[in-house]
Length: 121
Image (cartoon, rainbow, N blue to C red; front, side, top):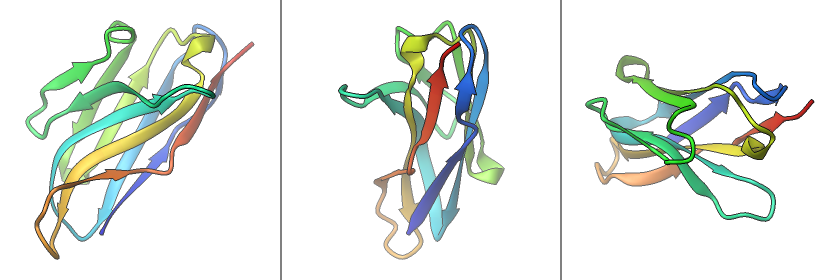
């Protein structure tokens, strides 16, 4: 099993910044892509950004100028730096990783429990 634990969410004023972190742990054999998704109340979960193990990143068009995804492979951790936050960025942010455990070596998608980001004055 692979476990993902997010941190760094909270309440921030419009125009502010937050840095989310997500650490993978467990019986990890390999981690391929990692990423962040978000889900606002009453809406479907949507992509924010992804990054491959080689460092190639992909961003949702609506956020690409305000967020930066990065990862530390040695720490099995992915980060999301968010700047110029807007009230419409309020959502639960979920970490995702396509990882293989050392029990079966089959890559599957894992999700974290989510961290709340609220942008409000």
